[in-house]
Image (cartoon, rainbow, N blue to C red; front, side):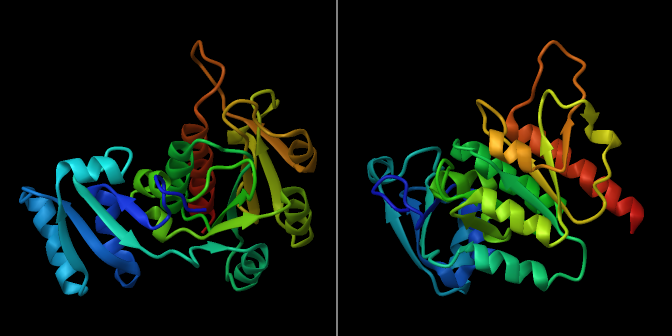
Length: 253
C-alpha cells in the first residue's frame, strides 16, 4: 500500500539501493543522489545506474528531507514493485515447484517495519523459501522495510494472505509441520526436529502468537534464556530459530 511518505516505490539507503540496482535494475526508473555527494560508495552507485541505463538526478539536502523519512544517507531509488509479493495461490504454486522440503517463516502480527525488514534479511541468509504475513495486522513492504532488509526484500519470496488460519490449515494439508515460538513452551528449540518440511511461526512484538495461530501449531518451542530477561526481540528470536533450522538441515544434507 502506497502513501505520500512511505511509498513502496521508494528505496532509501546506500546498501538497499545498491542491492536493488544489482538484483532488479529493470525495476528502477531513477537514482536520486544528494548534491555534493561524490565519495567512493556513491560513485559506485552512479556506475551501477549508468550500466543499467537508469537516470541519475541530484537533489538538495532539503529536498531529501522533505521526500524521504528515515536515514536515507543521501541516496534513494524510485522503482516499481507491483508484483513483488505472492498471493496465497502463488505461494502454493511455489511450494509445488520445490525440489526439497520447504522451510517457511510465518510472521503473525509483526507490525514494526524495522522488525519485518530484519526478519526478511535473516530469512534470506538462512535460505527460507518464503516468508508469509497476514494482509491485516502486519507491517507492509514499504521503504523502511526495504532499507532494513538491505536488499533481501528483492530476493526473498514474500507472500501476503488474507486469512492466516486458513493458510495454516492448507499448509498442514500439504504435509508441512507448523512450529510456533512461544516464551512459555516447555520444549526447547534445540530439542525440536526442524529438518523436514517446516513452517516456523513467530508472534507479534507485544503479545506473541494469537490464540488461533497457537492452536494450529503442531509443536511449540521456546529459546532457552540464561539472563534476567525472559524474551528476545522478535527479529532476534527469528534469526536464532532460523539458524537452528539451517544448522539441522546442513547436518542432514
